Length: 377
Image (cartoon, rainbow, N blue to C red; front, side, top):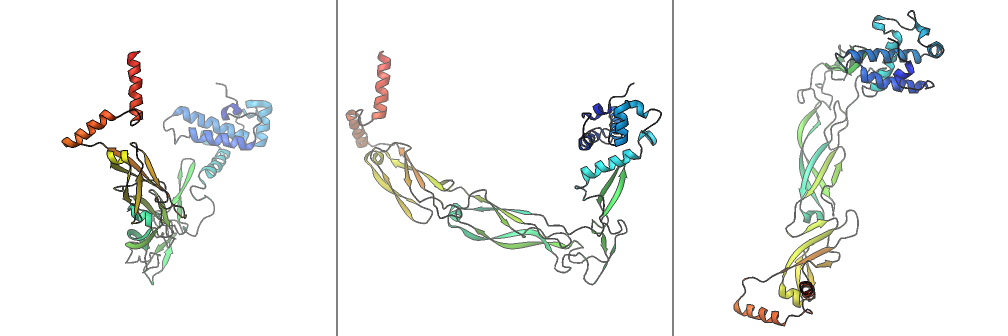
């Protein structure tokens, strides 16, 4: 069976530069690697074909010979070697690709030694529920946070005071060990010393060698005026203590605001629905509503007020976070229809109905006039 063109195998143009070749090879090698396609003879064949093509084209002299003579330039065993057709050039190229793909993730394959660095502690989340009044006024609250704190007995080292350490025999102090898996060399944290590179002669009796211990901490949290539902407050360095004396993480306070009996909030504005008597809506009047600053605000009802109309009370809403601005309060007027009428009340309403005209009820009067004309048409 005739071999495919090497450029076609890698999916690149004949004039592709080294970077394009390497990028194409890297993508295909990861796709058809035997470890990702166990038991697939087709994938194994493509993997060998890809590596043979790249092994040839990445070498300047081989590429020049291939461009001039094609596959004939490497007949009689030229350009291949080693068991299963994988020579030292393949091992080198795979090592380069491995470094590109996994180098940063594994902390780098080259260099090292001296043990692992101190590790930052985890961030913590605390859910705090407050009232709308507390959001309006702002306040300082005390919270109790279960967390890991640095052990004061061993100063976070994990070793019993007065005792020393010795080099880990598993990793020889590097904090990492390597294991060969097929064509790859995997580097991972040493399971014996957990990446420290050093072993304690005796662990601290108070923290069991962890360098930190569980504790409930009481913290003060400043809730600013105007804070909104869902706001996150960050307390730097108040999270879990780091490993091996590393810096602590942060604590994030997530604010939620309880529903209010009267007010609904939309940003800095407040909304309230207030039922009023039909007579008040017809004749006009006024009433008072409480406000979040422990005061009262007067609401004036104009004569002839219709259901759903709103009255705006400027500056009676919520303060804007970190600003001097204040929102407004909108009072929606819901008109209540009288129920359980007495005889006298009924007589008065019936008399009013007889005297009612389109001028007193222009919306309904005009609507039914249009209906009448439609029926007569």
